Image (cartoon, rainbow, N blue to C red; front, top):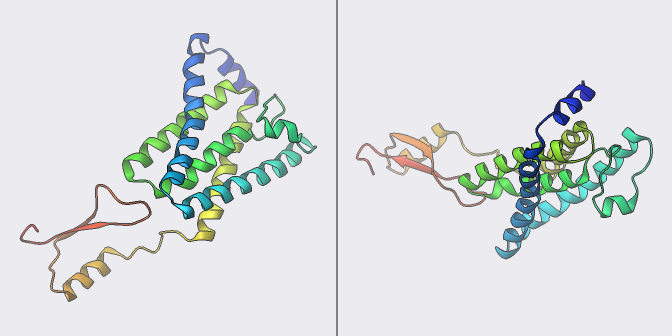
Amino acid sequence: FERSLVRLLASLPDWLDPLWQIVYDALGLLALALAALALAGRRPAVLAQAALSVALAVAITVVSSRLAVGRWPDLDDLARLRVDEATFPVLRVALAATIVLAVVPHLVRPLQRVARWTLLLGLLGGVLVEAAAPSGTLAALLVALVAATVVRLAFGTSAGHPETADVTAALRELGVEVEQLEPADRQPAGVFLARGLSPAGE
C-alpha cells in the first residue's frame, strides 16, 4: 500500500513542489515562534513542558528507529536532521510537531486553530517533500502525540473543569440566577473562562 502511495505522490505535478516546501517549512517556523513566544512571555512552565516533550520525542524516535530499521541512528544524522529513504521516524517532523502540541493547549482559541491547521498542512508537506517513506512522517506525528501527551499528563491537565450544572448551582448560592453558561470567545493561556447570562441579560 505504501509503495502504491509513493507512486501516487510521485505523479503529482512538479510545479506544486514549492508550495509543499513552504507549508513544510511553516511547521518548523511555527514551532520556533511558539518557543520564542513562551520564552519572551516568561512562561517557564510552558517552556519546561516543551523541553521535556522534545527530549522524550528524541528518545522515542531513537528507540523507534532501532526497532524499525534494525540499527541505532547515526548521531550526526540526528544532529543535522538528515533524512533519507531509510529514515524512520522523521526527527524534524517529530520535533516540530512535539513543540506545537506541547504549547497549543496554552494558546487562545484562534491561535490554537491556526497552529493545528499549520501542523496538518506541514505534515502533508513533509510527506510530499521528505525522502523518507510516508509512514516515517506519520510515525513522527505519533511520536509527537505520545511525547506531548505524556508530559502534559505528568504536569497535570485542565480536564477537571466543573460541570455546567455545578457552576450554575454555585452561582445560585451567591444569589446570581444564571440562564446560560458558555465558553468565552477568548481565554487566557491555560485558564477556562465561562460567561454567565442572567435573565436580565447581564
